[in-house]
Image 1 (cartoon, rainbow, N blue to C red):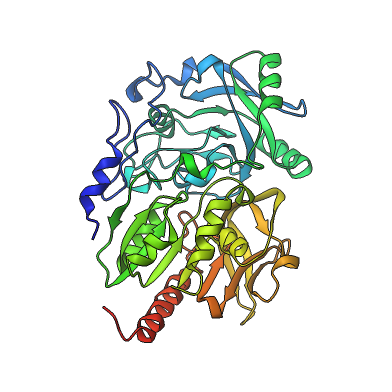
Image 2: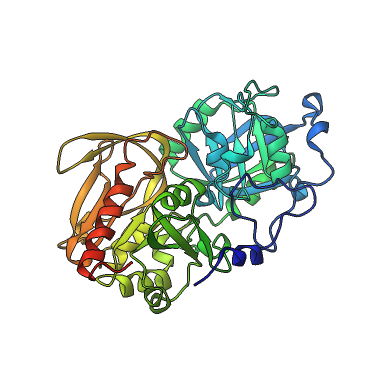
Length: 411
C-alpha cells in the first residue's frame, strides 16, 4: 500500500514561495518561482505602471500593471471571464485555468485579502488576471496578505483599471480569444496575442498532474483519484469518506484495478479533452470494473470513453451562478463551473443525460448504469460556489457501497 511519505517526493516550495495551507499538496519539482525583486511588504500602489491588455483581434484596453512583473513586460494566454462575486483566490489557484488569463466581471477583487488555506493547489496555474479594481487594503480577520502580495509571490501578472464590462461584452461576441497584457508596447502585445495558440487541441494536463502517487484522507472506502488538475476541496471531501490514492494522469488502468479500489474519481483539469486520447483509453479500461465518478474534464473523458465526442463552447462556463436542471426531478441547482469544452449530446448514444444547463442546454451530467459510471460537467465540491450539488459525493458513496456488496462486502 502506498503511504503518505510518497507525497514528499513531489518537492518543496522554493525560497520566498507561498507555503501551502494545512494539509495541502506540496508543489512538484520545476515549478515557477515568484516574480523577481518584489517582496509582499514592498508592494507600492503608487508605483504601478501604465499597462495594456491587447486581444488577438486588435481590441485594446488600458489599465495599470499589478502583481508580478512578467519577463519581457508581457504575458499571453487564452482570455476567459469569470462571473463569481467571491472566491477569487480559489479561482486563481484552480489548475483548470492553466493556459488562460482570467478576467473577473465582479468589479472589486481582493477586498477580503488572501488566506493560505483557501488555495486549491500549491501553485497558481493561470497566466494572468484582469480586474476593474484591485483592492489595496484587505478587510477580513482571516486575511494573511493582500491580493497584490499574493499575485507577486505566485508569479502572476495582472492588469487593473480595465473596463471589464466592455471586455466581457466583447468576449461574449468574439469568444475565448488569445490576449497579451503588460507594460510592453502595443505592437509587441498585439503580435504576442496573435501568436497565442489558446487551448484548442492542447494537452495541458501533463503540466499540472502529480508526478508520483500520494495519499489523502482516512475514510473507510478506498478511492483512486486521477489527478488531471485536482482541486484541494475535492480531495478534502473525498478524504472524509475514503482513503484516497491520487495518481498521475497517465497511470495505467490495470495498476489502478490491482489496488482493488471501491471507486475511481476522474478529476477536473485544463485543456481540450479531444487531445487526451491516452486518458480516454485509460477510463475505457476502468468502465464496468469499478464505480467511476467524473467531474468537469473527468466527465468529458468519461463521455469519450463511452463513445461520445466533445466540442468547444464560444466562451465557456466560468462562474458560481450557473443554473442546472436535474432531469429526474426537475430541481434546479445553482452550480460552480469552469470549462471551455462540453459533451456533444448527439454522440452520446444510449448514455443517460442526467443534468442540463438552463442557460444554453449544454449537457451537464451523464450516467451509464451498466458501466457503474456517472459524471457532471460542473463542480459539486464548489470551491468557490454554492453547495447545491454536494449530494453527488453521497451518490458516489452509495455506488461504492453497492459495488462492495456485489463483491461480497470486501473491506
